[in-house]
Length: 400
Image 1 (tube, rainbow, N blue to C red):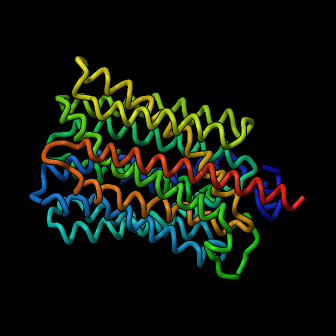
Image 2: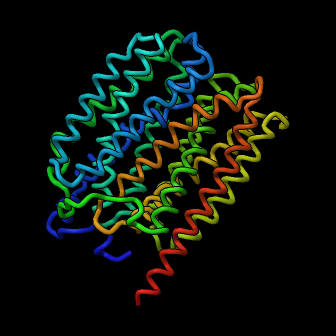
Image 3: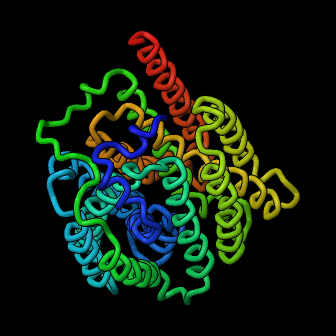
């Protein structure tokens, strides 16, 4: 990827957006707005344990934030390059905080679902701006990898601490945890978030079809990847409990997996695209598929805790490693900096469907069908990303 593609657009603004504190602000925003995804196993577990809801309602509540984020991110197609970014993000994070405050103590399905949808809408708008900003920087692959680092740290701390909260307070503990991080993020955004887009403002409407087959394949690959994550990750706590682990063991193991996965995001930041885009996809896809298969055999191991720790750590390592490459491949199909909100759209629509679909795959007390489903969708994901790389390469060669 050339320098022009890396920072897209006006050179002066692109240089301003490369400041360290500015990048930190954008990383923090892309972290807190993904809070529900990062805490999803604990959140769904708390809903199952403490709210008198059926499987469909649990799935809908687990998906509500993610539906909102998908809609909020999609709306960025129409305004992303036309608004003051700093004011937009501040307003969105304020609404996000209010929705989290109002969720405290709410146990009824409809009021809580409405509040979580509102929180997601606000988070999605802020996420679209911050992700576009990171893709406008000169070192896109490195900075999107740093974004994943921030998300990993957020998730590791939360998934370790929240199971230690007294049972009756765990659901509210999720909201308090998000509020604490959002307060820090608001302070950094106030002082350091860029006011205006780094790319030139473009007024023409954006169309997915206008980005050709590489764009469509990248969109589909992103969707299938996060459909896998939404289904499998959302119920991973339950899968571990089914294998005989305690809640404290699950929380500690998931948190340790998060910490280990930091090496994956740091590895992507260090490696960049020096080995291209296809090989990271091929290696990661093969390893993750094997890990999902091993999850299906978790109750066959003498030491289920040790097996879960190793399998989950490897899966999370490559989860953190590959996200930066997915964003780069997605953004390779972008010509003017407006297609990137569709990454958030594909990601969060799929994440929203995942927990809801997973709820209906549970066979009695067995969560194994979710894992087999994940293997199919993960295979589709990597085939589509590799297809996008191949088609774009052919298009570039054909234009020479």
